[in-house]
Image (cartoon, rainbow, N blue to C red; front, side, top):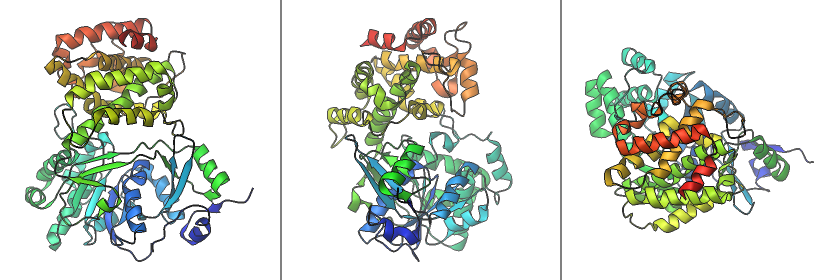
Amino acid sequence: MKTPIQLNQEKLSEIGSGIPVPTYNRSDNKIGMVHIGVGGFHRAHQAYYLHKLRQLGEASDWNICGIGLREADSNLHDIFKKQDHLYTLMVKHPDGKIEPEVIGSIIDFEMGTANPESVIARMANADTRIVSLTITEGGYNFNSTTGEFNFDNPDIQHELQIPQDPKTVYGFLTAALKRRRDAGLPAFTILICDNIEHNGDMARKMLLTFANAQDADLAEWIAKEVCFPNSMVDRITPVTTKADIEILEQTYGVKDEWPVTCEPYIQWVVEDKFSNGRPEFEKVGVQFVPDVGPYEKMKLRLLNAGHSVLGLLGVLHGHPTINACIEDETFATYLRAFMDTEATPVLGDIKGINLEEYKDSLLERFGNPNIKDSVGRICMESAAKLPKFLIATIHENLATGGSIKFATLVIAAWCYYSDKSIDKHGHPIEIVDAMSSELHQAANQTETDPLAFIKQESIFGNLIENERFTKLYAITVQKIYKDANIKKYMLEMI
């Protein structure tokens, strides 16, 4: 086998004889966007959209500088440095076809843990006009039930005392915005690309709360000058595997230490509300609308909740991937019943969207056998996800007298999963969740107190006070603890 070509700027023309590569000049270009949280999703979504725009010969002053605020980001930082910030995006189609393309829209990457001053300076630079974020639902430091900022976080307390040594996204944003204000520069836009309903409004509230505690005058300036457009993002992006790296080397002759895989589908809906200009993303398919709210809610309550339904039920049954769940008729039928009976009734009309067609497309996307998104990845950080994706739907259906049985089984399954950490075959399940110890402690009391798990107010709010829910939940969770045959209880409902 021919030795694969190491991905870097120097080798682009050679690589370009086999797969698409950037045709634009990546040197001496301005950085217009700084992005915090450069994971697979950002590289398959926002960076890809900018790459498409750059391929049209536009947006040369909008290139991206990635920022890592966690020690875990240092590995990607080192790989990016070796590869001149280039990476391969591998689009996987349901028929098995793979379309690789080298993406070049990220031209720098800096670590906030190693050099906070460099990151602040980059964000405060006059060329930077948008700071965007994908830091996961749990990264915004607020109580999911009350919606209030968490001042108990020791890093937040540190930043309030020593603003010049930021640790969190809030410390870096306020430090950079203060510097811009003091220099007479216009504010940058803060663009959230995480799966949180009204994500821009939420980020605005959290940042202003933090800034007000640190510097009330600065908070007033931020409130007046900084735009926080709401946005809805969508593209299934599983974790890169060793097999993906090998396919790229063996089939396409490219050595990329951290490529990204994704599905063909992509969507981005954004409020057209920016502080200091934006790229003309509409030229590459981004929708700019006056109100993102209905689109956000549709995606969170159908796609994201649907993922969690399959993930938590599937992991207990022993299915390894989301597509394996969909290939199981019971799981596919159950998911559609949840979407039709419990999620759809709380959505209302959404302009330009046929919900039946959208739900059909979700089943097709989830079933893509070439993606193989692990149920383990979907179950990660469920404590941050489920209040927004699933528990909110339960609350709304309780208020209107709607069905809650499908979602309640998922919550009961989550309890068993958090307690026992095994599937029906007795195989251990690795639980990755910032609240894993609290979840386990509450779930572990279930056999003596069936309602122990749902007494966690920060996750469930006041569900414990709703008799209709507690009766159904108690019956359901006791069944699962008696016989963890999750499929049997799914069949009973459908």
